[in-house]
Length: 565
Ligand code: DPX
Ligand code: MG
Image 1 (cartoon, rainbow, N blue to C red):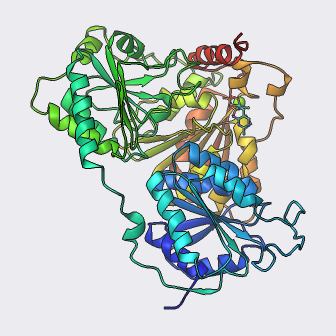
Image 2 (image 1 turned 90 degrees about the vertical axis):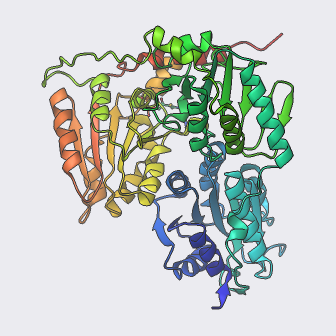
Image 3 (image 1 turned 30 degrees about the vertical axis):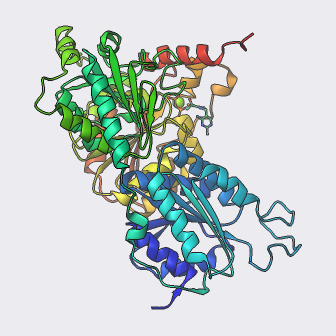
């Protein structure tokens, strides 16, 4: 079979496991899109704009391990690059492909449309280099295969986004055939001597402690170490907590799981245990101003082992070029059959941890809808096949409170924190995993940024359940720092679905202002087939979680502190 640059790229996409790629058309990428369409193993999925296209791919990567999106030059790519920044922050390998000026126009002095109007077309590549782990420009078919392979291989290894721009007249040029895909998929193995030394150092560290705890961070998935973390927990028998952003990265029904560690937004008794513990094994953790609640809940220093995807830090030593899963398995093996290091677990039970206090539901059917009842409704429909997307805002804390059976997953975007992320990201995730019970919890303010992608859920008949919290504004910002800028224009959110449906869509929009209306809406949503159901949940502006209030205060205090003298 004769290859072109575009069909080579499509073949690589299909062979790394992408059954879909996301796209918005533009004249710099039309020929490329034609080439990609030739490959029947990697379907083209369309988005409403390029920001959403980037986030759709980001969501697809969450479900599928990797993703790709294809946009046009500058007017498209510069929007998509925001989502690529997000993929970098969230450790997701998303390949951004941009159509680019004709190879003859580079260095020609011609001024082209869709550019900033100067004659240097390298600016987009230079910007992309800052936001990706590999960025290449293809202006000849001769070196296209190695450039494409370099970008994709680096993204898959580093779990970071990559960028490929292809001159519009080169996409359909003949090029060499691809080699075996293992060249892109195989990872270098851990350095044996370093691994041995790291396992010894971590094991010795734990042996020297009485009361260790394990803290799971959101980089654990990118490190491919979720299963290994369970084996370590089994071997040590100590308490395990997840950071806010890492919910569902450790099974919540595991005997050693105690909940979320997130300062005053922590689950009951978790802070007590962390205060009592003498050491922390921090696995794939991101400690930023939000996750440490304004630097107040930040395990660090000599009693903390910081273990990441390829680097483990113990005491005075750093061990590089070793996979986290290998370190964790090595340590688990070291402790297998030895007395458990379970003091924190014993203490957790002693102080009454794990005992769930069920607050009786005494709300009347015609009572005004509350945030608490929305959370209760969400909890009632979570199954092992459920994935919940929690948007930035009070949705974080509502989702955080939800108890997950084994198999249920939560997706957050807490490092990048782009409001509106969740709508396209949920769309991309649902394209990859339509068989799951996909639930989106999103605030009114966030929804207004990216609402169009609900239209794409309608287009593809995806059965997503959307809880849209209409609390009349940016409530999380109200708690951090209020002003007139936190008020938003109200929309008829339930009504918007009719607009997206037009003549052929099967989406459903429902509005709930009382307890009974929400209960009915949830029943309707579960029974609905052939499209998304958006439930607009109307609650007062100040009806938020207690976590939001205390967390918001801490973060505001930290970020408002005066310059150091
Ligand atoms: C902003 C945030 O309505 O949720 O629960 O009412 O807060 P809550 P909403 O979706 O409002 C979100 C709003 C404005 N953050 O409270 S979190 C600042 C911000 C951001 N991302 C972008 N722009 C502004 N995080 C792209
Ligand atoms: Mg709101």
